[in-house]
Amino acid sequence: MGLRDKKRNQRRVLSRRSAGPRAGEGKDFLPLEGKEQRIREKKQAEEPENTATVLYIGHIPHGFYEDQMQGFFQQFGAVKRVRIARNRKTGKSKHYGFIEFENPEVAKIVADEMNNYLLFEHTLQIAPVPLEKVHAKLWKGVRKGFVPVDQVAIERKRLSKDRTVEEHQRMLEGIVKRDEKCRKRIKAAGIDYECPALIGSVQPSAKKIKFDED
Image (cartoon, rainbow, N blue to C red; front, side, top):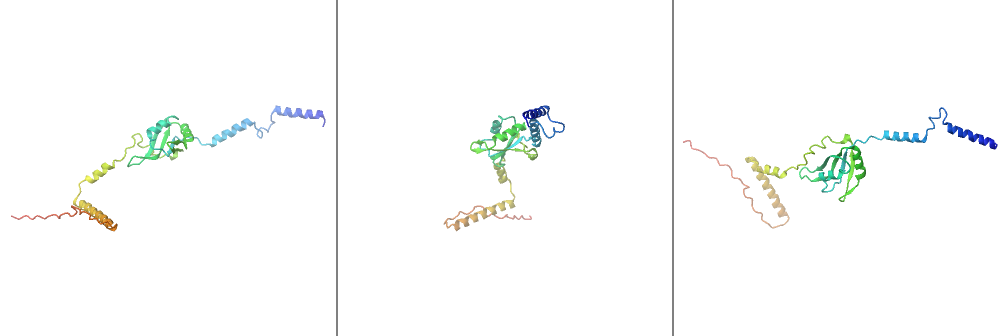
């Protein structure tokens, strides 16, 4: 092949490239930019749409309660509701809770950025809660705040109630049994101690009064 033939072949290759793909070649050879765009659109279609607005927060430190939590997370966006799990009797925190944001994108940012965040020597554990897993009664009574049960008032009412003769007798029997167990434990331990006797443990029997017919 001479020099003229080489130049002629180069011109043919350049003319084909400038003319574009032939009929039927467009399906097999796509432009690089269009191919990347289609791959990107396919990935976006496969990824599920983020609609979770509720986040689970674990390892909550002492003193970081509803008001403090709402004030802290407001820097990311509008906070809708906050709930911390508490003991029903004492009202103390169980160190985990839930927070709800107005915007799901804000919730996703908080879950990504604040997970494993060190706060007061506690590492926060934050994860989004899907809508189908949010309990129907999660936010019940959240506006009223937590009101602990007054156990002292309940016990006072129970101990101060009027008892019948049978109930009073059962109460005395229980006191006597506990006192006998205590005496046996003291004696088994080898302690020389004389326990004082219980006063009122023996109740007098009811007297029957007879009236004369006159």
